[in-house]
Length: 377
Ligand SMILES: *[C@@H]1O[C@H](CO)[C@@H](O)[C@H](O)[C@H]1NC(C)=O
Ligand SMILES: *[C@@H]1O[C@H](CO)[C@@H](O)[C@H](O)[C@H]1NC(C)=O
Ligand SMILES: *[C@@H]1O[C@H](CO)[C@@H](O)[C@H](O)[C@H]1NC(C)=O
Ligand SMILES: *[C@@H]1O[C@H](CO)[C@@H](O)[C@H](O)[C@H]1NC(C)=O
Ligand SMILES: *[C@@H]1O[C@H](CO)[C@@H](O)[C@H](O)[C@H]1NC(C)=O
Ligand SMILES: *[C@@H]1O[C@H](CO)[C@@H](O)[C@H](O)[C@H]1NC(C)=O
Ligand SMILES: *[C@@H]1O[C@H](CO)[C@@H](O)[C@H](O)[C@H]1NC(C)=O
Image 1 (cartoon, rainbow, N blue to C red):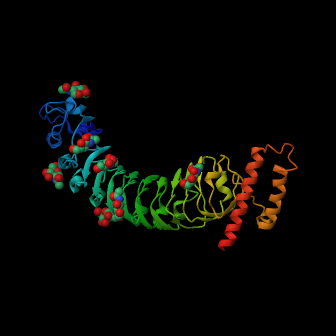
Image 2 (cartoon, protein in one colour):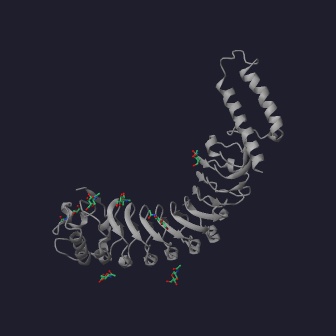
Image 3 (cartoon, rainbow, N blue to C red):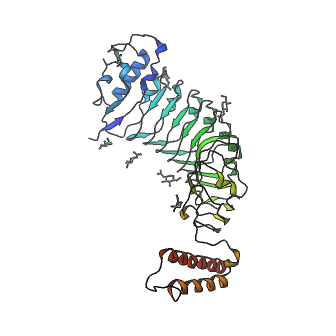
């Protein structure tokens, strides 16, 4: 039926040249144990139509990509754990690959890179992964993993890249994640159900990229920021309950993208924020920020700032002049401008300049906001 692309990418970097020439059957570059395990995997997938290189008499060194078909649901073949020389395992975009990670994965002690993203894997992430000391990159994103993130992962002293996003993970971010050895570190935990506060210990880590968006994190996450860090991407958007004062936060000088939308972040936008030369994307919308928007080098549009408590100034239509924030003054100014825009002051009353119109509508919206805030207070 459907053709699946099975990629066991560089499966055979496993067959490290240091093994020499063990002389397996038809397999001059394979370790015999690995050869036998690969055959078990091949058989457990019901000997799918596959590239010639996967034929029992094939040449191991070219078993790099495997294209075939199989009918699901199929678990990760248990025989994979009999590949002690495997350094890289990639099985991705296989909707028929289901079930839990076999605990015996912990047998792959030479594994440096594990990519199992975009499958339908379920169950917990085994804490035994934390014993595969060679791992430098883990991608388990876009699956249906549940349970807590094992704190043991911080024991992986070579780990620089951890993708656990787009799963159904719950509980807190482990405190031990403040102990990652590699710096800077790439951490992706978005689109899960993580709760609680961001552990203060995370402040010790220099994250090049950190994405904690779309979880249920609460409270103060200022530890993620810092002027001395090399962070280029920081996303904590849509946690809804992150709540802290942004006014005195210092930012990485390498910041390219900052997204904090849909939280309860308050205070002002620090002027220094507008001095970050590298900043190309900014979204602080839907928070409780106040005060004048500093002049950013990169011209962000109003959608980056909308729905805050009282941010004002361009690109928002809201005027920062506080005397105009009194409804009476604002409404009389508005009435005056309306009559100029639409009435006598306008040479051609049939036509209204679109800039004038936009400005007037901005003031109407502002007046409504002020009135609404007063009614609510
Ligand atoms: C196996 O494949 C490699 C790379 O494609 C090639 O260099 C080598 O000669 C092949 N060995 C045999 C026995 O076919
Ligand atoms: C998954 O397995 C089902 C049922 O065995 C099959 O109909 C479907 O084509 C397979 N999906 C893919 C993408 O191969
Ligand atoms: C998981 O399986 C369901 C059907 O059982 C399918 O709709 C979905 O696309 C699969 N997910 C992935 C990531 O392949
Ligand atoms: C680990 O690998 C060895 C062979 O290297 C094998 O005998 C053993 O069964 C494996 N253990 C698990 C739990 O798969
Ligand atoms: C890390 O490894 C050490 C030694 O194996 C162990 O004692 C410790 O519990 C591990 N830490 C975590 C967080 O699992
Ligand atoms: C995620 O877990 C929640 C309960 O914790 C459950 O209601 C929801 O259906 C799960 N979602 C998926 C995609 O498994
Ligand atoms: C900022 O986020 C809000 C809310 O998700 C969205 O409506 C708006 O388009 C975003 N703006 C930018 C520039 O990303």
